[in-house]
Image (cartoon, rainbow, N blue to C red; front, side):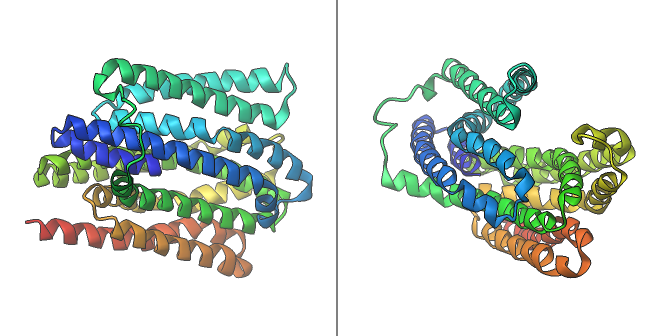
Length: 375
């Protein structure tokens, strides 16, 4: 979230034809990412056990969860820098290269998963190391390519120095976007907490269904990222009509593709769900299927939320996304922690759609208000 926000500033300066501004933006983004990587790594490693206990993690999977998360937390820097460099490339108009390196990373991740878990017997920690090492490779490849393709990104010590004013400008956009990602994760933690109280069968079903749901949700996340860069560039260039037309096209495409992927997963769930299970159990399959059936019809609402939120953020209207984050968080907590005591697993599955609806209504109203005000 932070790195996407930082790249909005870079994209605005790219759109306005300001090479010095691009270098300054890239420099302070790097400094801030180092700072936040150190803080996040230290906090999460130290609080790993309390976090797992707070989530009501069952004792029979507590150690596995701990082994996995510690490695993931140690590798926070690799994740942050891959996202920073790939978002920087997108802000400069290159969205293909990060995709290619992500494909390489994903293939390597699968290979390392098999290598670390099967012959090396590293268990769940091996899966975590595979993820971190593959992301680190992607970050290095993106960096090498970025420095070769865009000479203006070869930063000097002056650009890699902390400047309070520049940091404040970037955090004004980056912090709300980071907060929105955090709110989504807090909501997911609340949902996981509620599911953990239903036993390991519900956990297994929820996890399997969530894997497929998150795959479909990535479509909307992709349009969120691409819309941010597109709107930022055109906002910097002062072209309001392209912002309006581009946002409309992005929304239509996101709705069509996310619904298509969702329907495909529903149709092929009998083949896909068992991929995430050690052994097939009808009850686990039922839990996973229910999650998919309850969330899939609301993907168009998520499309509205993602596209309009990115557009508003990229036009320096961060207050709307910030308030929408709070709406989303409150609705998730009410449904997953409050109403789940009455309606159980079903209302937990509907926690995300409820949150999407509330946030999307507010963001759509804010977007149209801003666009009318600019006429």
